[in-house]
Image 1 (cartoon, helix red, strand yellow):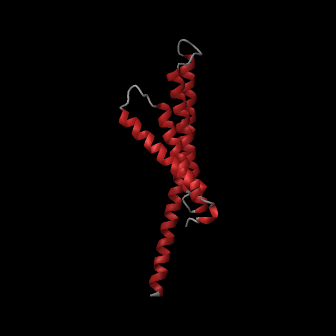
Image 2: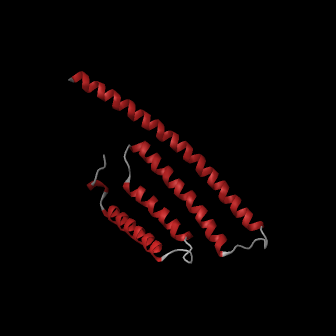
Image 3: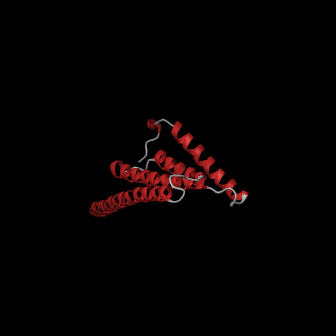
Length: 149
């Protein structure tokens, strides 16, 4: 029986190492995505500034730029989630919820309310409210009272 337990331990150890390598690969890929996202935001701003009339941005241009910024910031948050998981081997619920809130906020910022049905707007509001309440509740719990394992 003890021999079987050692074999299981070795298998689990190997599987954890594989997952760890996959997380490192994801962090490298996310770094590339963030770098390319920053280049894309810069290129988008450059194109909007040089388009006639030069140095004039419309509200839709500004909102598109905000949306692009938010995508890069969300990618950075996801990268932080991966790094924290690599470091602590624990999923940090607060950070995941903060990332979700940022993604929902991005969606709200770029919504075109003239093009959407009221049910879509209501659904987005419900998701935002539920995630915000969840974040608030989790944030109010002291770190020492809930150890994640």
